[in-house]
Image (cartoon, rainbow, N blue to C red; front, side, top):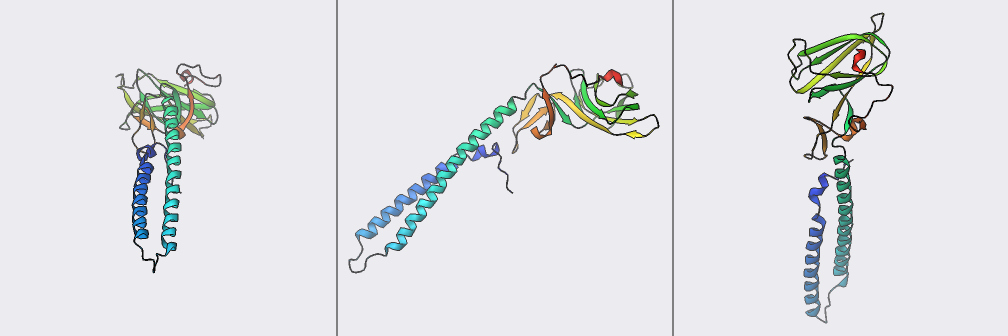
Length: 233
């Protein structure tokens, strides 16, 4: 199945009107030649009308197809404009995405994680873009949704530089059995990349599509009562 992107289709708008103009010019030429033939035909051997009648029908069918394409182009243009308007509305919003890599910027990086059950001990490790661990913290953590906000503190005491960092969480219960953990990243949308077939939202250098978003809210909106703060870890 061929997918049509309203955004990428913008570059092709106007093509049908050009095709229609070309067909009109060809049709005018055809009529001029046909008129000349009719004027100069031999009365004793008149032209066979079936052939040029068929050509007239073909011209009509092609012109109708081009008109349909023009209508489709207008619909695509409206859809593309609507898509761009909608995606621009995400700028400045706080989004949550499935994943474990977040940007440390303006003094913090935020991750959400969900524990299938309460953990007797959950160990959180933050690694830099090279995969080198820079921070570790552990402690008992309740079941359900939790939030970890990292302030850039590192194990060696040197404040972390801004950039992308990855979180990994290992949790066990009181018997030492591993507990399933699902992580999400949280950040403010600060850019949009319109290169490619589909526009991409951006959190720093991290690009993502609308289908990757699990939740959106205005920045500084209070969390729900079910959310736990990073103090629990």
